[in-house]
Amino acid sequence: MGVTGDKGEIVFKVIVIGDGSVGKTTLLKQYVEHQFETEYIPTVGVNILKEQIQVGDKNVNLMLWDIAGQPQFYLLHKVYYNGANGVILMFDLTNSPSFTNINNWYNELVKYGLENVPIIMCGNKSDLKGDRKIIKPMAHSKMEQLGLPAYFETSALEGTNVKVAFNKIIELMMNRKKFK
Image 1 (cartoon, rainbow, N blue to C red):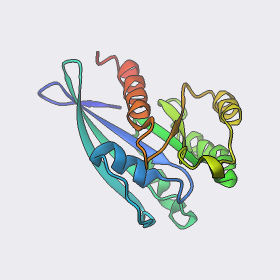
Image 2 (cartoon, rainbow, N blue to C red):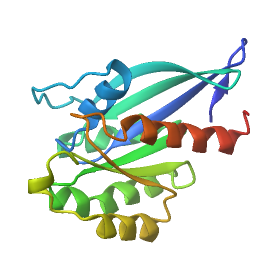
Image 3 (tube, rainbow, N blue to C red):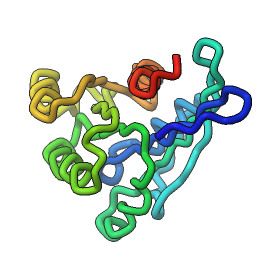
Protein backbone atom coordinates (compact mmCIF):
# COMPACT_ATOMS: atom_id res chain seq x y z
CA MET A 1 0.00 0.00 0.00
CA GLY A 2 1.08 3.56 -0.54
CA VAL A 3 2.68 5.15 2.49
CA THR A 4 1.76 8.64 3.63
CA GLY A 5 4.63 10.52 5.25
CA ASP A 6 4.56 13.27 7.87
CA LYS A 7 4.29 16.15 5.39
CA GLY A 8 1.49 14.75 3.26
CA GLU A 9 3.98 12.85 1.13
CA ILE A 10 2.91 9.65 -0.54
CA VAL A 11 5.30 6.88 -1.54
CA PHE A 12 4.28 4.44 -4.27
CA LYS A 13 6.25 1.43 -5.43
CA VAL A 14 5.74 0.77 -9.13
CA ILE A 15 7.28 -2.32 -10.70
CA VAL A 16 8.01 -2.44 -14.42
CA ILE A 17 8.09 -5.98 -15.78
CA GLY A 18 8.39 -7.76 -19.11
CA ASP A 19 10.88 -9.74 -21.16
CA GLY A 20 14.49 -8.67 -21.44
CA SER A 21 15.23 -5.94 -24.02
CA VAL A 22 11.62 -4.67 -24.34
CA GLY A 23 12.78 -1.22 -23.17
CA LYS A 24 11.91 -1.12 -19.46
CA THR A 25 15.12 0.67 -18.47
CA THR A 26 14.98 3.14 -21.35
CA LEU A 27 11.32 3.92 -20.65
CA LEU A 28 12.13 4.69 -17.01
CA LYS A 29 15.16 6.79 -17.96
CA GLN A 30 13.00 8.73 -20.41
CA TYR A 31 10.40 9.34 -17.71
CA VAL A 32 12.80 10.29 -14.90
CA GLU A 33 15.78 11.80 -16.73
CA HIS A 34 14.18 12.75 -20.08
CA GLN A 35 16.93 10.96 -21.95
CA PHE A 36 17.31 7.88 -24.12
CA GLU A 37 20.04 5.35 -23.45
CA THR A 38 21.39 4.10 -26.79
CA GLU A 39 23.51 1.26 -25.41
CA TYR A 40 21.67 -1.88 -24.30
CA ILE A 41 22.92 -3.04 -20.93
CA PRO A 42 20.74 -5.78 -19.39
CA THR A 43 19.46 -5.02 -15.90
CA VAL A 44 21.00 -7.33 -13.32
CA GLY A 45 18.33 -8.18 -10.75
CA VAL A 46 16.67 -4.82 -10.17
CA ASN A 47 17.41 -1.14 -10.71
CA ILE A 48 15.47 1.42 -8.65
CA LEU A 49 14.82 4.96 -9.81
CA LYS A 50 13.08 7.64 -7.79
CA GLU A 51 10.88 10.45 -9.06
CA GLN A 52 8.97 13.03 -7.05
CA ILE A 53 5.92 14.69 -8.56
CA GLN A 54 3.14 16.93 -7.35
CA VAL A 55 -0.44 15.64 -7.59
CA GLY A 56 -2.82 18.30 -6.35
CA ASP A 57 -1.59 19.25 -2.90
CA LYS A 58 0.28 15.97 -2.42
CA ASN A 59 3.94 15.20 -2.93
CA VAL A 60 4.13 11.79 -4.57
CA ASN A 61 7.40 9.88 -4.39
CA LEU A 62 7.57 7.14 -6.98
CA MET A 63 9.93 4.27 -6.34
CA LEU A 64 10.27 2.77 -9.83
CA TRP A 65 11.54 -0.78 -9.78
CA ASP A 66 13.05 -1.83 -13.12
CA ILE A 67 13.00 -5.62 -12.82
CA ALA A 68 15.27 -7.79 -14.94
CA GLY A 69 13.42 -9.81 -17.57
CA GLN A 70 16.03 -12.52 -18.05
CA PRO A 71 15.05 -16.00 -16.81
CA GLN A 72 18.02 -16.31 -14.44
CA PHE A 73 16.45 -13.61 -12.23
CA TYR A 74 12.94 -15.12 -11.99
CA LEU A 75 13.57 -16.61 -8.54
CA LEU A 76 14.10 -13.09 -7.17
CA HIS A 77 10.79 -11.74 -8.46
CA LYS A 78 8.78 -12.57 -5.35
CA VAL A 79 11.06 -10.34 -3.27
CA TYR A 80 11.04 -7.55 -5.86
CA TYR A 81 7.25 -7.64 -6.27
CA ASN A 82 6.57 -7.43 -2.53
CA GLY A 83 4.74 -4.23 -1.58
CA ALA A 84 4.09 -3.05 -5.14
CA ASN A 85 1.33 -0.44 -5.47
CA GLY A 86 1.23 -0.48 -9.27
CA VAL A 87 2.56 -2.44 -12.23
CA ILE A 88 3.55 -1.56 -15.77
CA LEU A 89 3.50 -4.70 -17.92
CA MET A 90 5.71 -4.12 -20.98
CA PHE A 91 6.31 -5.78 -24.29
CA ASP A 92 8.13 -4.81 -27.49
CA LEU A 93 5.86 -4.02 -30.46
CA THR A 94 8.54 -5.46 -32.76
CA ASN A 95 8.95 -8.74 -30.84
CA SER A 96 6.06 -11.24 -30.96
CA PRO A 97 7.38 -13.55 -28.19
CA SER A 98 7.57 -10.60 -25.76
CA PHE A 99 3.87 -9.99 -26.43
CA THR A 100 2.95 -13.66 -26.01
CA ASN A 101 4.87 -13.70 -22.71
CA ILE A 102 2.62 -10.96 -21.28
CA ASN A 103 0.38 -13.84 -20.15
CA ASN A 104 3.27 -15.40 -18.22
CA TRP A 105 4.14 -12.08 -16.58
CA TYR A 106 0.51 -11.51 -15.63
CA ASN A 107 0.22 -15.06 -14.24
CA GLU A 108 3.29 -14.37 -12.11
CA LEU A 109 1.57 -11.26 -10.72
CA VAL A 110 -1.44 -13.40 -9.82
CA LYS A 111 0.85 -16.02 -8.25
CA TYR A 112 2.32 -13.34 -5.98
CA GLY A 113 -1.06 -11.78 -5.15
CA LEU A 114 -0.74 -8.58 -7.19
CA GLU A 115 -3.71 -9.00 -9.54
CA ASN A 116 -5.69 -6.41 -7.57
CA VAL A 117 -3.14 -3.58 -7.71
CA PRO A 118 -3.43 -1.15 -10.64
CA ILE A 119 -1.80 -2.68 -13.73
CA ILE A 120 -1.38 -1.05 -17.13
CA MET A 121 0.15 -2.50 -20.28
CA CYS A 122 2.64 -0.74 -22.56
CA GLY A 123 3.75 -1.77 -26.03
CA ASN A 124 7.14 -0.09 -26.42
CA LYS A 125 9.20 0.88 -29.49
CA SER A 126 6.28 2.46 -31.36
CA ASP A 127 8.87 4.50 -33.29
CA LEU A 128 9.98 1.34 -35.16
CA LYS A 129 6.93 1.35 -37.43
CA GLY A 130 8.50 -0.75 -40.20
CA ASP A 131 9.45 -3.52 -37.77
CA ARG A 132 6.11 -3.68 -35.98
CA LYS A 133 4.71 -7.18 -35.31
CA ILE A 134 1.90 -6.39 -32.84
CA ILE A 135 -1.02 -4.26 -34.03
CA LYS A 136 -3.30 -2.23 -31.76
CA PRO A 137 -6.33 -4.56 -31.96
CA MET A 138 -4.17 -7.48 -30.75
CA ALA A 139 -2.91 -5.45 -27.79
CA HIS A 140 -6.39 -4.14 -26.92
CA SER A 141 -7.72 -7.70 -27.03
CA LYS A 142 -4.96 -8.82 -24.63
CA MET A 143 -5.70 -5.87 -22.33
CA GLU A 144 -9.39 -6.82 -22.21
CA GLN A 145 -8.60 -10.52 -21.77
CA LEU A 146 -6.48 -9.70 -18.70
CA GLY A 147 -9.00 -7.15 -17.38
CA LEU A 148 -6.51 -4.28 -17.46
CA PRO A 149 -7.78 -0.67 -17.41
CA ALA A 150 -5.34 0.83 -19.92
CA TYR A 151 -2.93 0.17 -22.78
CA PHE A 152 -0.40 2.61 -24.20
CA GLU A 153 1.94 2.45 -27.17
CA THR A 154 5.16 4.10 -26.06
CA SER A 155 8.49 5.08 -27.54
CA ALA A 156 11.29 5.52 -25.05
CA LEU A 157 13.38 6.94 -27.90
CA GLU A 158 10.91 9.69 -28.84
CA GLY A 159 9.20 9.99 -25.46
CA THR A 160 5.81 9.20 -27.02
CA ASN A 161 3.12 8.44 -24.41
CA VAL A 162 5.72 7.89 -21.66
CA LYS A 163 4.40 10.62 -19.38
CA VAL A 164 0.79 9.73 -20.27
CA ALA A 165 1.34 6.09 -19.22
CA PHE A 166 2.93 7.10 -15.91
CA ASN A 167 0.19 9.63 -15.25
CA LYS A 168 -2.37 6.84 -15.72
CA ILE A 169 -0.71 4.43 -13.27
CA ILE A 170 -0.36 7.29 -10.74
CA GLU A 171 -4.03 8.23 -11.20
CA LEU A 172 -5.09 4.59 -10.69
CA MET A 173 -2.98 4.27 -7.53
CA MET A 174 -4.24 7.60 -6.14
CA ASN A 175 -7.87 6.64 -6.82
CA ARG A 176 -7.40 3.24 -5.23
CA LYS A 177 -5.91 4.69 -2.07
CA LYS A 178 -8.27 7.68 -1.92
CA PHE A 179 -5.41 10.13 -1.32
CA LYS A 180 -7.12 12.92 -3.24
